[in-house]
Image 1 (cartoon, protein in one colour):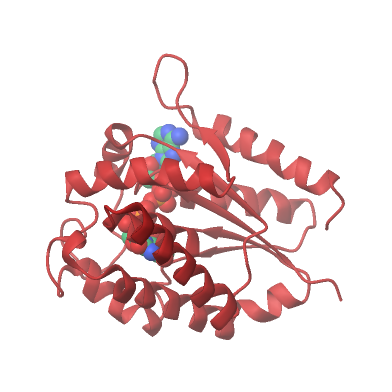
Image 2 (spheres, rainbow, N blue to C red; image 1 turned 135 degrees about the vertical axis):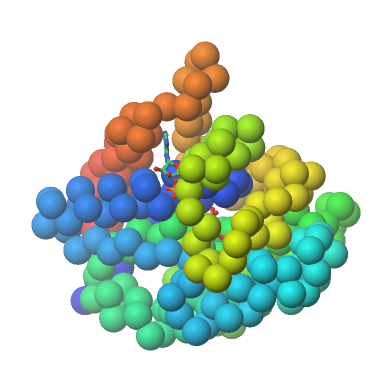
Length: 232
Ligand SMILES: Nc1ncnc2c1ncn2[C@@H]1O[C@H](COP(=O)(O)OP(=O)(O)O)[C@@H](O)[C@H]1O
Ligand SMILES: Cc1cn([C@H]2C[C@H](O)[C@@H](COP(=O)(O)OP(=O)(O)O)O2)c(=O)[nH]c1=O
């Protein structure tokens, strides 16, 4: 049987519409009788996210940049490994299409942004790739769709959204550090280009946010191109 496909919805800012878009796309594909499944990382519902919660709640320190990116990455990588083994493997191996809200690509963005030095950043990115895709043998994304939303807009969306970690009051350590948010967004644009991701500019010409439907139609047109390549 043909292996599945992994399409990642990614961005360099929190509260950028990833969950919304992953849900609408997977639902539309299901309506078309395609075996599509929405998945999300971190997998907060699983015990495998315990160390991620400790990290995001600030138990290792409030400043994300002071927390070792190699260590922090492993928290997220192990959560992915456990979730893949326990929940996703049968779907993927039987030809399903996983639509993933974040993935290894988030470690690439958020953890590599902690490096100032370019060669240290590149060394980290190579290490991470090897850890998650070779050593842990997680599936590599076939396509990464990058939602480009600048922080000044995503911060507004974040205000409206409920926090995802149920016992956290207020924001997580990534969300409350403006310096880290801006730096990570710039790093995300660099990573998106370096790895040739498909970038969706979520702002109109007048700098207002496009509607959920407009962004969905752009994502769906990318899906149609993928489908027409005949890989599925
Ligand atoms: N294009 C958009 N325009 C207006 N509101 C949006 C848009 N996309 C998402 N939202 C809203 O912003 C909030 C964050 O969206 P969500 O999909 O949860 O983001 P993420 O998964 O990136 O954290 C939600 O309340 C959602 O309804
Ligand atoms: C999945 C993942 C997330 N992260 C970061 C991105 C977010 O700042 C934070 C929490 O993820 P998440 O709850 O998905 O953020 P949001 O929905 O607000 O966009 O963890 C990593 O650093 N590495 C990873 O592998």
